Amino acid sequence: MPRPTVSSISRDLIAIGHRFYTRGWVQGTSGNFSAVVSQKPLRMAITASSVHKGQLRAAHILQMNESGTTIGPRRSAPSAEARLHLEIVRRRGAGAVLHTHSIWGTILSASAGNGDAVTIDGFEMLKGLSGVSTHQHAEHIPIVDNDQDMVRLSGVVGETLDRNPRAHAFLLRRHGLYTWGDTLADAERHVEILEFLFETIGRSATFRPVGGEATGHYGAIENS
Image (tube, rainbow, N blue to C red):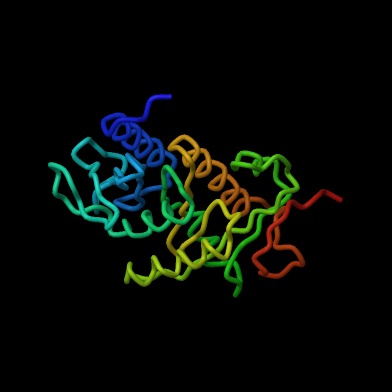
């Protein structure tokens, strides 16, 4: 398979921005997206800071190096959270990273009790996550406290990823979802799966934390 070009990656990121905006997952200037252009040296395409994802165009897709510095002809600042993208790529070997700010993800990240994670199990949609083949899978999604200091936050994210090697995503508390994949298509699928599950948790009248308390463990409830 030919390696994606910067132009093709830019087109894909723009299209994802439009799709995610119509789904209500990246309102205003929220969210940020990236994809790896090359591994050695590490080069990434990433959305610029403070741009509306429903109105993305080619000028809003920047290239950055392994230190998060913009390279190439476009000198705008990359997303303020570029360090988090770099940390995920380094720790997970990801080919793409997507970050959303949905209502349901934000609510879940803020209402999962005093735990530092949510666990979702028993749903058929979990099989859409890479490497998952059964609804009996329990997806453990760490919650990381939000922080405006990106150097400090990227360090916490790196430690969190190391402690949770099987996680497909994490939530920033009262902020949103970060997920990734080997390709942009994989990462987009993970967003769709996880946002579906977050909304299901928020909407379902037959859904409650296991044990009836805000433990952060969410499982499918069978009808009696």
